[in-house]
Image 1 (cartoon, one colour):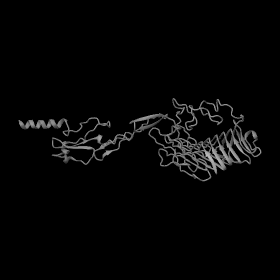
Image 2 (tube, rainbow, N blue to C red):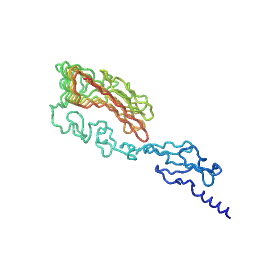
Image 3 (cartoon, rainbow, N blue to C red):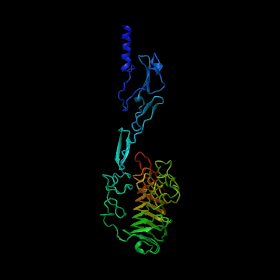
Image 4 (tube, rainbow, N blue to C red):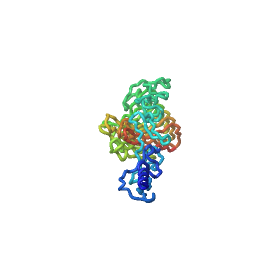
Length: 445
């Protein structure tokens, strides 16, 4: 009778508990339930002490049960490294602790930027705002930014007069501006040597683009007198029919830019240029390397020099499935005794196309801006050679790199803004194209 009672007690102790004083399946702080690997009792080694049951796996609790059999219970909590964003670590009964699946935080909404906050231990979703000016893209709910690649354009800022841009996104260029100079409502015209004074042709060896005028120019131009730009000069984009376009070089005794020289997306076409990647959807390089498409190993290469007295056209982003990459920024060179910029000179890259396919074209790289004064260079305005962002719906659309901006003169001042940031990459539905690298800014006074 005593022997039967003893056997019954041993069975009761072994049937419902672990016999090791450990946690019996309770929830751990990782949110994963711990368990042990089931084995038939015939497979379990016999033991008398806990030390005899060590299986060499750091994340198991090894013990000798009251029935004389070893127990190796999985302890997932012992694998927790305390980092939220790298996922929940797991315990493998052969390998020990192994990494879990990282937190992607992807909400499949193209109008949000998703990130994992280690500090708050949660996923965060912010309205898409590529230029980080505080105003989301107006194609998304609650956004009012009509050009989310340009931080100088937003529904939250005031209109900048006479720059030829709808800065406040009200649908009208220079709306509400007081007249700051005599306006000339000339139509858009092409600049050549036969053009008369109304469209900015040389008059007694001078160039004058009046406030309100829009003039298209490209190539090299020499003026024995001064060059004054109060209106807008658009640099003719480079094309197969006009391969010398995309670049504007002005030589004069003095050059004053109070308006805007616009060479945005005037450089190499998508898929063309020394900084174009051979991998679909990657961003173009110039002042830095281009962003990397999701299925690629490298973006477009950098080229040119940071300190030489020359600049190049920006390269086009890599093409996608039927989509052309974004155009590179143009090239602007101003040489004079004195060069003064109180307005703006822009040579940003262009975004890739989108026809609804999986891989959209990559962003174009920023172009080149060179101000070369034999006496001095003074800048209080904005110089911009930014890379273009990857297409906002591009699964494999990477950003273009920034371009190159250079200032040379015996004396000068730079109190304005120089922008050479790379464009952001698309990161949608688990794809992870990267942004382009920043370009270079160099001054030698």
